[in-house]
Length: 332
Length: 295
Image 1 (cartoon, rainbow over the protein chains, first blue to last red):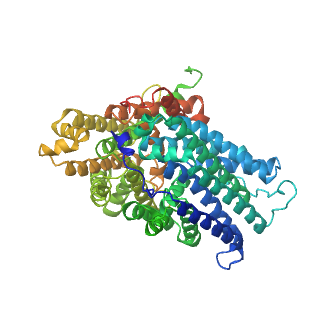
Image 2: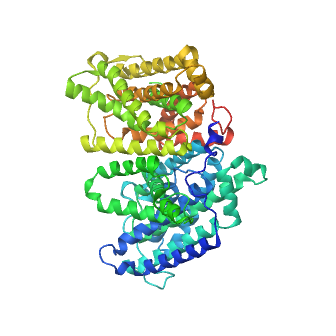
């Protein structure tokens, strides 16, 4: 009973129909976003490239997560595993093998994809809240693995002082500003890819499965293949975000694989608006800024995060972008 | 000195006992989750925080009011249970018509709040809680030394688990509960107050978690993260056992505790992950869990 009921109601993603006008609007937003990213480092107060890089990496992470939750209806509570493992792989290969950034990021992404395939194959065997618990428990395996292999992960210290080698062996990205533009490029490419997936026939089937799985099955779709594919895609992109973060912030640590991180990415998506294209970006910006500016409050940050969770679930299920989208009557 | 499977018997039985004790906590906690899930269809993510609360309430009763362990064993579950009733009425009751994932997210948020508040109040280093005078010392069983308190924990949790099983499976109240799980609308038509039943069930499940917390207080140091650490393992236990059955929660809880203990003897590196590995294997073979009904 529980399992079918879980799919009876779609998550608070929007049911607004896609129109020609909507895609023109989306194109305009993407262009505005690209322009904003180009000039942001030169704007005082918020224009710290270091801070912006962090926001962009987490925004990509949240978008990857949202691809699964908002469009696939699959609540993974273990996305830190792909993010964290990829950040270790990328940090390790950059530091100990001296690989160039694009190669170590690629390897990190690949490790996220491989892990996503293994965990996804196991997790899609159950649905709804079981699925969430299984992804969480599997992710915890990765955490313990990271804790117990200090030779690879640096244990409690993590991998510090990750070098920013020359891009393609030629272009120096040592400065925060140069690195920022690399991160911004990765981010835009990642988000455009997600946008393309959502609006492809594959994405349409995915939404059909989210809204009514038994019906999708009866229409002849191989639901499990679709679920596994979106799982692997989402894990790869989470890996891309983690790998890029490790090079940009020059650190991979246990925080990246801890289950609290999985919770944070859920929070970002929820705040921004699950099932919207731009929601997770806004959500990540809000949550990371909050952590940045409230960091003096210590454990109160946890309390504030918990409160936001409760408020979002009780009163604000559509999230920031979801509310705006409803007001505009356009899917965002 | 003889050896068993290449391991000194003291070490083997010592770890077995430790495993049995961890198993006791897994069993009570997964039982509480199963009871709550049965009627509310919500995975109570706050369960770990509520277990931690039980331990802290015991500490507060002792240090602030001078009430000892035995008082705590009775009062802490009641106090936590009352907070559970408030939580259910204020928050959870508004979510039943929505997708279940909102219940999970809400309880996750509540868990963060409770954990953060306790960390602000008590710091994260942990506080000591003395073993009650009556249960100090231990027994020499010939092949090993068994501290009295640890024996008590195992006995107490077996009794509580069996009592819960008895109430749910064998009493009239339990039959109402099971009826409400199967078909709330029909049960309500028979004049049974299902919302009240749901509220009390949540309170009871929270009480179970707090009871485990009081039992744990003298063994582990009382600290704000103790719930966060154990709850993920308990989730794995729940997946392995299958949420369908009360007995499943109890049997898998104890069983996995023992397996974890044995792993610590023979292959310590894997002891933290063995439960998750078993979970993966069980999922491959029996996706509904060992005792679960097929979904």
